[in-house]
Image (tube, rainbow, N blue to C red; front, side, top):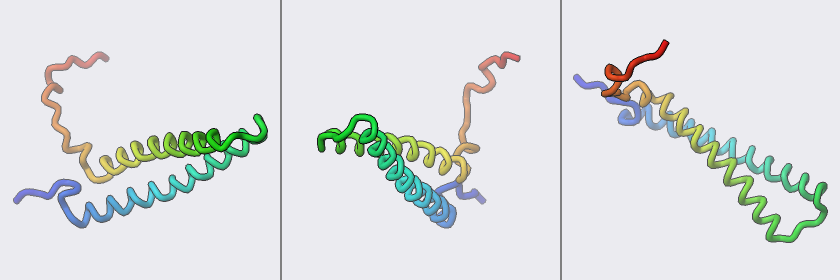
Length: 99
């Protein structure tokens, strides 16, 4: 009998993707707080800003924040579902280990 691996099991996949969406939703709100903090700081430091600078700041801060969040959340998804344990390293016996 073969064991279903990680996201091949519908129940595991459902739980894992729910966790992923929960992390991303929470961090999207955190990203919005970072955008607000950046805009407040820039207003204090530089004074009134043109609308294009405000839009660029919003997009730059939020998208950068979400890119980092997405990559980390995918790493947690991979680790939490057992994908990391399934990796086979064909070179493991050929690479010398330095102690």
